[in-house]
Image 1 (tube, rainbow, N blue to C red):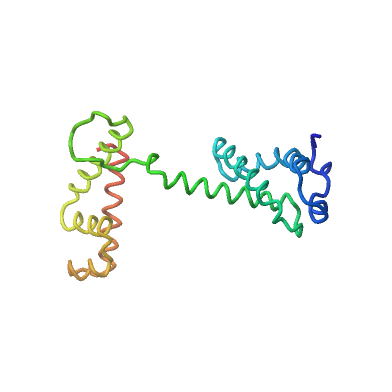
Image 2: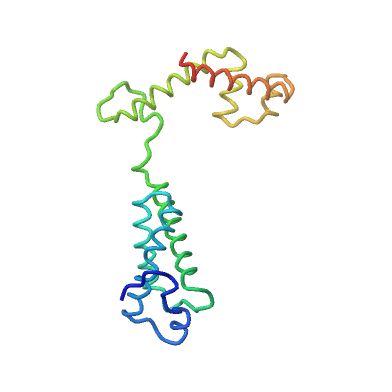
Length: 187
């Protein structure tokens, strides 16, 4: 039995409070909510293929956990919460998957075999950035490198270079602007 609209769906919360879920009821729930949950998963995950994985995972979780549903809230709210949880798990898994990320500089060799075009572009841009920073001159070059790459605080830099914290902030701001401008202009 296919349900086209949500308002044609029975009150599953009441049914589940009274009876244990069986295969027929699970099929009805899936038929009733699948389309709206798919739309919600695409919205929440922002990626159609990730949304498909998420909705499948959510449906499996629903089948396993339907016994624990107490019926206090509408079933669609509970199912949406499962979608949100599944989407978050999928994103975390994708974000932490080392196969999807490559280091900025894999090695210092000029050997380009085995590198993708993207890796070569990243390395080329990184080298341009380093050259632009080198062109800043001292102490701006050292200030920027120490603050950005070594996480040196403004106060520690002020003491080291015998400048006020405001002067350090000003020099860092001007240095970043100069590097950004030259990057944009392609100099």
